[in-house]
Length: 177
Picture 1 (spheres, helix red, strand yellow):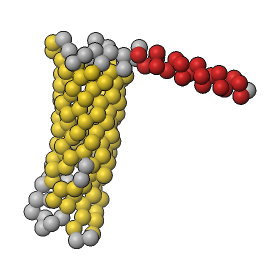
Picture 2: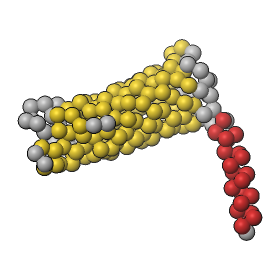
Picture 3: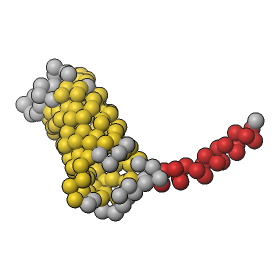
Picture 4: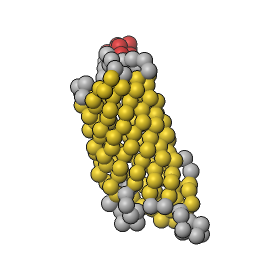
C-alpha cells in the first residue's frame, strides 16, 4: 500500500507541470486602491482564475491591506483593510490581438478595521460587486491588467460602497493565445 501511494505521488508530481502547461489557468498579483467614504486604502491583491472559453471564465481574489489611512473629518480616526475575498464570473472580449476588455460580476466579503483613541470597530465589506477592465498580454504567458470594481457594501457604517482600482501582472499557465 505504501509503495502504491508513493508511486501515485511521484506520477502526480511528474504530470502536474504538463497538466498546467495545457490548462486555461491564470494568476495575477498586484496592488489595489480602495476608496470608501472618506478613506483611501492600499492593498496587495492576488487573483486566480480559469477560462472556460475564450469569452467566459471565473476567478477568485484575495486582498490584504498595506497600512492604515486617516478618515477625513473624523478627528484622527484611522481605517485599515484587514482582508477582502471575492468570487467572480468574468467575460472577455478580444479588441485587438493581445488586448482584451473584461467585465466581471460576483460577490465579495472582507473586513475593515477603524480605530480612534484606542477604541476599534470592525466593518464588514460584504456585498455584490461588478467591474470593468482591460488585459494586455506582452507574451503568450505574461501580461498586465488594470480594472475597476464597485462593491455595493451591505454595511450601514460604509455609506456609498467601495470603489476598487487595481493594476497587476498576469501569468497564464497555458499561454492561451
